Image 1 (cartoon, rainbow, N blue to C red):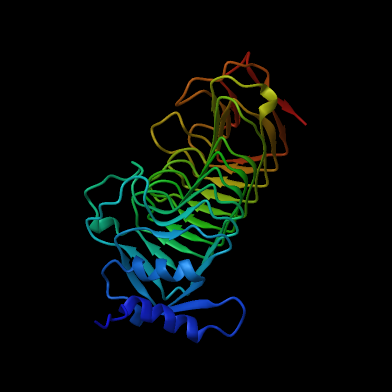
Image 2 (cartoon, rainbow, N blue to C red):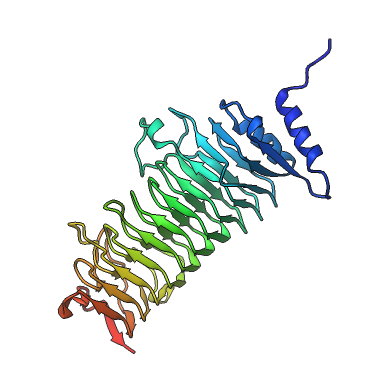
Length: 358
């Protein structure tokens, strides 16, 4: 009996033949590759072979696109979209793209659409429908992506080292634009983020971080522009947040907070040269331009204006304060406008936290 070669394999082989001009092939998948039914199958077969380029594709997926091989690049053009199917049965451990235990991976250049309107069976912010999920993936780069329209995070990364998240356009996201958990070495720069449900950039127990030149804007929804969270042991003492524009966020422009037990020296931030305006307008204690507890740091040359509740505030909100005392924030040449003088710097944690002036 003669067995037919599946169309999927034929397409992949054709892609390989068309792109075999070098030692490392790139498989090109174009618009004719997909039929709108579990199109992740074709992409996954190709990724198991080599790098993949999406050229003018519109792929509808019912299971995750999986990258679990070191050194893979999944790229494309902005005429290409990977979209989640209607009424998806994705669990909270699924995502449109999953990078699992693979190092030196790059995802770049195309669109991810979480199809929020077609998936009303789940709620935003409950862990469903992350666009990209990475775990134990070192040297991961996500750049020049259009990320939108889902119930979860743009990129949720756990236990990754040396993550770069840059030049992405992120909007209508159901949770955080970037959520880094237990990561070491995180750079987020030149991203344009419009908030809807939670924060633009968020850290949880992650260290050696640079957030710079991001544009984060609220439009009546969402949480803080940047959220930096520490809980318990572990170190977060090399966090730099600089040269960002953060405007009109529902909660604080930058929210920094810790809880549980840890040494004072393990929590330090350097926040400088940011432009923060119109933030913290919700009827909530998580307000102001920069809100902090449980961290020491340097706040330098930030411009803060028109923020509800105050400019720079030390206050315990959301979770209990850490058990240690002696947290000191140094203020140096911050500029305030449209904030009453008595509200420019507020310390509600006298005895455990203090401000000093350089």
